[in-house]
Amino acid sequence: MSRAGETDGHRSRRTSGRHAEAALPRNFSRLWLGSAASHLGRMNAAIALPLLALSLTHSAVFAGWVAAAGTFPSLLLYLPAGVLVDRLDRRSVMIACQSARFAIALVLVIGLLTMADPAPLLLGAAAADGTLASLYNLAEATLIRRIVPVDALPDAMARNEARSHIALLLGRPLGGFLYGCNRSYPFIVDALTSLFSVFMILKIQRGDTESPRTADKEARESNLRDCARQLIRDPFLRMLLIVCSATNFAFQIIFLMLIVQAERTFESSAVIGLLFTASGLGGTLGAVAAPRLVRKRRKFLAIFVCVWGWAAAIAAVWVFDHPIAGFAAWGVISLLGAHVNVALTVHLATHVPDAMLARVTGINNFVTGSAVPLGASFSGYLLSMVSTPRSASATVLALTLCVALGVSVYGLHRRKTQLKRRVRPLLLRMYLVPHRPRRPLNAYHDPTDDGRPCDGIRGGVAEGDIVARQ
Image (tube, rainbow, N blue to C red; front, side, top):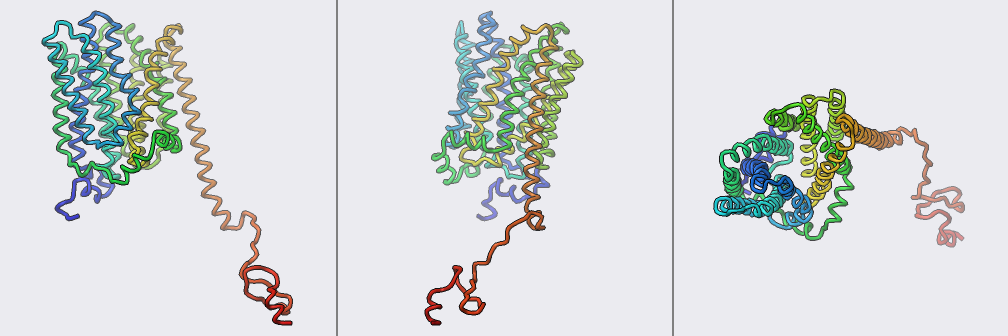
């Protein structure tokens, strides 16, 4: 390929890992801007939809169904979405998803302006938007591998992680503010951000996003069972699958417990909302610091530190038993969780074949994401059964300690196995391990030749030689 025809991705691959930030190509910047705008618009609409449902129907049950409609369909469709993304052009999938989100937001705005009772639109809009968002996120996560060089992947994944936390931090207050001005404003902003995302994705060069023909052939031949086997056989992915599922379940209890404590302690809802910004701030700081730790290639040690850090944060919640201490610990949990997410996404992008990356990611997201609604439903029953919130935090602390101990035992076992693999060849070289000497097979002894060796393959006396000598 000529120098003039080189793409941004190919030029950046020739830069060294020391200048990883400069190695991020223009295509990634375009993708990041478009996805950041879309994510901000979606968070803005996600907070406005339940508020609108509650205002139209005055039913908390219907508002809860609208909030759930944006979560459950996307969770259930992770598996088929992974299959679809692996078999189609990922850039085209992203453009189609954002175009559909623009149309849904536009229909919702028109319904709010023209319909007397637009409540029936809310359930369908929430379900469709959540489904399209999950499909878009899978396509984006797998497309980054094709447009970003390997040395720059930690920075790219860290920027995506920080983008998610910043959008969550700004999107919710923006949605509340816009809804207070006019109930259709949040969805107008959502439509505009989706349109801007389409424009930025169209500027990504198609040649950098296409997969090789061999990858397409592998994608057609492999199935979900092969992808699940790929996930389970990888030690790091297998460990994170268990760790993230258990902690996602446990942290939902802490989340609801902090809401209950804050409602009892503070009368202002603005103060409660301000306390919840600790999660976004902690996640953003963790994402900024994550690339340095990931580049050291000590992934198992990083997970070990993060899990024990989570246990220490939960212990602080149990000891102090106050909402301010609880929200500070929640920020620490988000900070460490950002490290885990960046390490996971980088490992997926570098160790999973491109042909099955979307399906492996979808299976992982489905398993770990299923723990969130399960933990949320269990937390309500647990808080209703215990006498004080401190008992609930003690339950979470016990579960987190079990996870931390499991990670520690697994790490020691893995370290012991690695030492055996390294030491055994050295012992064999130094003859510290007894071994039986082997008899040479390239010669044998013929007693008829008075002890003179004769060349041959098998031991014993060659019959032809004996006959000749007689």
